[in-house]
Length: 216
Image (tube, rainbow, N blue to C red):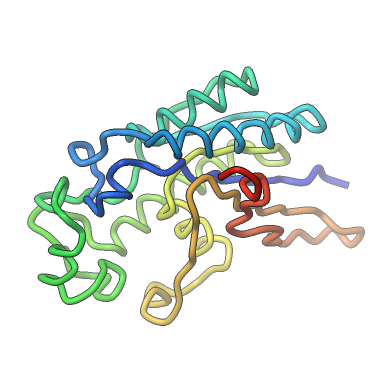
């Protein structure tokens, strides 16, 4: 029987741009808050316990500062170096970067997902263009590490992209449903092979924050 592939995506801890409601691209992201660092410390402790039981084969992260700082804590705790995957960065925000999300959504008449084929700001990606980029990067990682445990530190949008990919959702699914992902949460997918030789992706956990339940 083939080994089980496991994909674990951990969202970054609370960032200053999240608290301020600022679009957190390359310019708008100024890193984690103190609360976010505490969340990530608890997240890393949980991942370390899992790593000791069955080691992660690889660890990927994204280049935005709040994820870089999250990955640094995880690397220090697990002694597992991270590989930055630029294509897993959050959406490219164009002129919206660093501006209040409330202003951007008011001008666009909703979040990017509500009109997924139109840029929400000058120079921004459309939501569907972002999904195409992120899902292709995830497909490459999954193909590269088939049968292994994969850990990724990333964004809520990355988790949404993985869910779209592995649930094989249509491009307009964002008009009807969404996924809540809290800071420092864990989403877990597994692809075992059954005794008939069949493999299917199974969503084991989404937005799991049990490690934060005491002393957030």
